[in-house]
Image 1 (cartoon, rainbow, N blue to C red):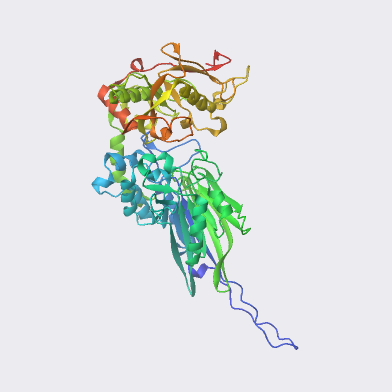
Image 2 (tube, rainbow, N blue to C red):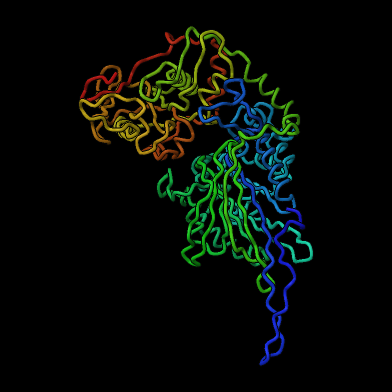
Amino acid sequence: MQTSRLAIAGTAALSALVLVAPPAQAAKPAKTVTVTVMGTSDTHGNTLNWDYFKDAAYTDSQGNSIGLAKVSSLVNKVRAERGADRTLLFDSGDTIQGTPLAYYYAKVEPITTTGVIHPMAKAMNAIGYDAVTLGNHEFNYGLPLLATWIKQMKAPVLGANAVHAKTGLPAYKPFVIKTMKVKGDKPIKVGVLGLTNPGVAIWDKANVEGKLRFTDLVDSAKKWVPIIRGQGADVVVVTAHAGDDGMSSYGDALPVENASAMVAEQVPGVDAVLFGHAHNEVPEKFVTNKVTGQQVLLSEPSKWGQRLSVLDFELAKQRGKWVVTGKSATTLNTNTVAEDPKIVNLLKPQHETTIGYVNKVVAQSAQELSAAESPYKDTPILDYIQHVQVETVKQALPDSTLPVLSIAAPFSRSAVFPAGDVRVRDVAGLYVYDNTLMAVKLTGAQIKEYLEYSAKYFNQLAPGDPVDVSKLTNAGNTPDYNYDQLSGVSYDIDVAKPVGRRVANLTYDGAPVPDDKEFVVAINNYRQSGGGGFPHVTGAEVVYNAQVEIRQALIEYATAQGTIDPADFAASNWKLTRDGQPLF
């Protein structure tokens, strides 16, 4: 907003003379200024409106667009309307992981060795972000790559509650204060405090253990907000990579995962929380601070650059200080604008390099393999993951006499290996996470409990009720990636039974599995470190951990074999039942 458009009061009028009193001047109406904060979160490596897994422009059933090129067009529009000198742009984390583009510059041609500017740094620098907060996925590729990306960023990268393990001192910049000039008056200072997710300690244990600790979001905000206010901030915004429901996927093992609303409720001096992590769209939400009674504004801009949060703060001059007198928020849909050609052109070389990479043919598939039914049926395409994991672990443990089992989850229902050419993007579309392969030792009794925990993914189905697959899965909002299937043993899941009493007919080599029988179980690092809260695995003996990326193992195995034929690996070893009868 240009200074001429600011809501500045006119000159004060003189009051009328009164016979019994000397002339007096009425107080000037307060001078008001509107400051706008724009926000993104969970962009996950999306620069352009492109689906690398489909090798086509992005599309979904809701008509969403993705990518920073679209975000840039909205940002330009808001800056033009409000005035660039009255706007700020923040991000709440999960930036450098999530697409083949991000993977390529982390693993195939890592920026740590090439010195190339990371595509997300290149795009965010060009758009002009004012501050970016660390998400949990920033730690996926290790601390050296994260440090390189931070150096490449023009905007400060914040993470107040990520502290050095030994000293407890901040490992990253905790906050920044941005100053906005006001013509003819004192400037307005906007402080932004960045908070990342404590779950990093579990999810990226291999990268951070012994190096970083992640403190409670509320405690961290209570420490830093008074410091930010003490340095003269008129507005305080918390950018938090944490959802707002107060829940944790890992129970009480660490500080609360989704603590954004808790920060708003419990920390005095916070005007607004721009949050992320949950991938939801929350245009505007108010939470009452329990200490001050003030209304705290919250907004979450969905994921992947689909939305831009816009938070407006009205400030009035009171007793020589700027005070927030009003606030509101909304989200803007990036499908309403074209991509910013500046960003498209800037990212074109890296985008085209990635397209070349994902279209590389790795094998021939004997038939089409689909993951569409994988959450409720034993499908060959998930058996392929299991097969590669088992073979990788067996090769690494040639002297082991224990049977090797494998765990995998249906990450993507849309994944397909087409008949004929299978490309990198097909494999990447099946295994969308940057997990590494591990193996642990479990007993038969532990495996039974593990499967019972996994089986809570299904809603209970009463006798005689129709089988509606759209209502069968995701009980209690359990995501597909937290439904683990086990290969190497056979078992049934009886969805007519209550949670905890569903697994039946657990056998190995045709015989019931004894409670004390030992197995080696191939598992991903996310699950082994406690992701999803599955029993026994975090404390189990680790017998293999060579930091092999599962996606890359799939690609290399397919390349070495040259063919993908279900006859070589498919094994129908589990099924859903109802009162003992097959559901399908």
